Amino acid sequence: MDYRLLGASGLKVPVLTLGTGTFGGRGELFKAWGNTDVAEAKRLVDICLEAGLNMFDSADIYSEGAAEEILGAAIKGRRDQVLISTKATFRSGSDINAVGSSRHHLIRAIDGALQRLGTDYIDLFQLHGFDAATPVEETLRTLDDLIAAGKIRYIGCSNFSGWHLMKSLAVAERYGWARYVAHQAYYSLVGREYEWELMPLALDQKVGCVVWSPLGWGRLTGRIRRGQPLPPSSRLQSQLVVDIGPQVPEEHLFKVVDALDAVAAETGKTVPQIALNWLLQRPSVATLIIGARNEEQLRNNLGAV
Image (tube, rainbow, N blue to C red; front, top):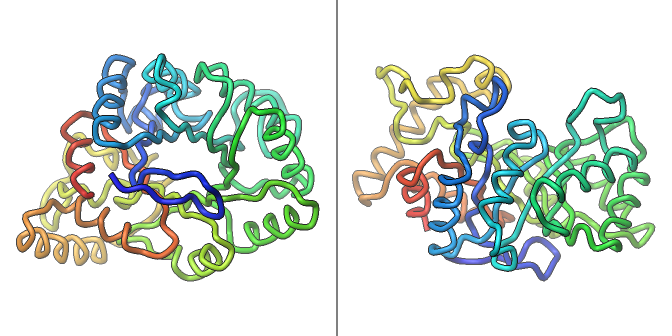
């Protein structure tokens, strides 16, 4: 496993990170992703650590918090061997303030995540989205305070536009607060919008890209091809999953898959391995978040490096 510095920080992260969206299977959205339990999660963590993959990504909304709980149980007794990345911003409860990036919500979100994960610190905490209702100053001051309190070590953001990210970096610099070292963004061979504005910004400001859904929301697994029915186990069988995720024109998808099939025939690698490896050659990319419902899928993805 190769490691890269995460943005303008001294933290070295593996080029592949295991996502926990498949852990738990609670709720209509996440049951379509998988239902990995603690026993299977421990096995996946074992395989990851054997391969040198020591970073695991989660979020408070994944399976209504169950993903963080399962991850915490899976790494119990080996906390010092791993890096934990998690996120919050989206609604996590019925209380009117249980959403957004206000001081009120972020402090509660961090304390809740620490409890579910069974740890006293989070290595990388990221805002899951931009909160236009909360002043950027309030958000960044809170994150800086949480770092000072030892509850989080590095901060990042996710799904920000260029101006969201640049304004946040400017405010942090103005007040001398901690700055974002990572931006978790969608980027794949069938979704390259990241290259237009966010990639140049990341290179200029030294913000590492943590790529989510590098296989195009499950479309580049090698099981989806022109003229063939969608596999029964594909998450794309769920209309909710299709609607909420990145959209890809069908003809464009099949052209990319055809090209990947040709490369696979020449190299002996699989479609997902080629798609992942291509991303690792792109500027600003620090790590790719891979998902796996089982050991076979995990080992296939690990074969990209």
